[in-house]
Amino acid sequence: MTYYIHAKKFFLKNTTENGGYLEITDDGKFGTFYTEDNKPEGKIVDYSDKMVAPGLVDTHIHGLVGNDVMDNDWTKINEMSEGLLKAGVTSWLPTTLTASHEQLMETCRMIGENYQKATGAKVRGIHFEGPFYTEEHKGAQNPKYFRDPDVKEFEEWQEAAHGMIKKISIAPERKGSVEFTSAVASDDVAVTLGHSSATFEQAKACVEAGASGFTHAYNGMSGLNHRQPGMVGAAMSMNFVDDELICDGHHVQPYAARILIDKKTPEHIALITDCMSAGLMPDGEYVLGELPVTVADGQVRLQEEPHNLAGSILLLKDAIKNVVDWNIATEEEAVTMGSYVPAKSSKIADKCGSITPGHDADFIILDDDMSLSETYLDGASRYKA
Image (tube, rainbow, N blue to C red):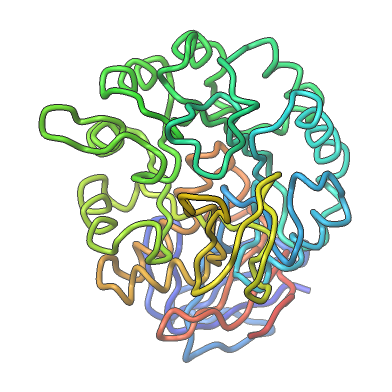
């Protein structure tokens, strides 16, 4: 049955409206938005003291609720999909880690054959983080599998994934990176740059070849120097590219996050979590890929020296709240960075990331302080805080 959501604020795709009524059609899609003085006839669900935003889109996430994408188990992927509803996430890209060709093939096949069965947040594609990376900035990636980009290898993965690879991150200084980018970047696949010691010039060459983003900006990349701008300088200054940003307060100092948001504008910042299996789990010892890690004090660190940060336990609902609490973004900007930009930057904005007529009615209810109150999927309430 068609019904209408009434709330005090709506974060629509192109405007933010105070008050009004949002139509949810009987087939679980967004319909027409009506202003406060144009009340429609029919069932009204009232959230007059709350705000309505599109469901969040997490395009860089390795694990949750004790499960890891690289476990290569659909049941575990679906458990993550259900858990993500507690984070306000309604669409996501399961994200791989650097591994052998065969292991990545198996993961592609598993997701490609099952993604439509997800009962929670919708699997909109796969994000390949690696294996075409550089050892100096390996982070929690296993360097024994690092290699140069190979178009044929990517095509084999994409075929196994039934075309579901939407994003792949590479290091621009690896041999053949420009040629790989030219061949792979398209309207359906984003090539992004990360885990790299590249010079500004090497990064720029990949961007001009079609790379459209930077992987967790600041983290795992050559820094900004006034004579050698490096990867950070490229992420800040290249036109029309989108930068991932981890806003847990540990990966990037809030004022550094503010500098990037101010420079790029919120329309080019994709808030991500880089969450690993310990998300929504207690502190303790876990494994990320093949590497043992310790979770404590809101951080994930490798157990081996030098104890690098290794992913996060950040939830996207907390990332959008953090940037508002830190006074580095408005509510509207936070929502944009947590929904539309991740979708746009991963070539899935035609399906999710905004309150758009005809899109699936995947949305969240927020309190005044940006805390998550409720998550809807296909117009049905699926989680209440």
